[in-house]
Length: 272
Image (tube, rainbow, N blue to C red):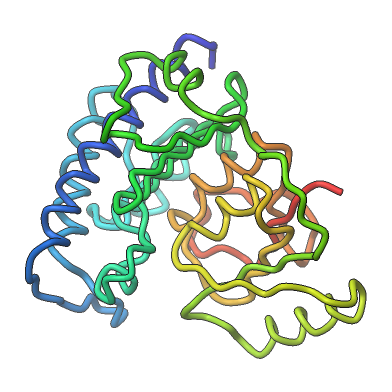
């Protein structure tokens, strides 16, 4: 995929995430009902409203859209997709319900089962992360609030390239607020034995992956179930910041559009 097309798609994905973020914040500021899907995971009107807005933008590209809140698409159909959008319209619904602000809007473009573009928007903080091969990974503050640009190049100029410079000297592990499994705890204990003193931070949604990309954490071990749309956008941002997300069993980069859409256990980490 050429540079201009990627730039156009990236601008479109940013625009979609910002508009969806406005709608999500409007719902967040009011009382809302919580429903539950068949798998017992929570669902709010913010999830579906965000999905509709993002889908409106992305379908203009003519590419398929695979969204957590979209219509279920059989693998028999998906397996023939070479390029498609993967979307989590509200990653961290539990955090949204708790009103702690740690939820995100995630949009990724997948080509040949690998992420080639990713956008993560944190509406409460007006904080935008994005990345692709041609821009590297970028962090923009006040996005959609005081900063709103018409081109990818302008967004790049407005932001800071990742990873950011850091003076941290203590090895830092970031984990999930909702899924600290015994396996994860054992792994963190082993890291402490290796590195001596470590810091362990807890964050919701895709904020954990963003912390790896920007350099505020060193490693994120995820030894609990996740779906592909949970991490595809973050994977792109980590990847184009020079970091990695790998399958713990094979050591290979994660791939997408699998038959079940469930990720293997993985580790996201800064390059050493």
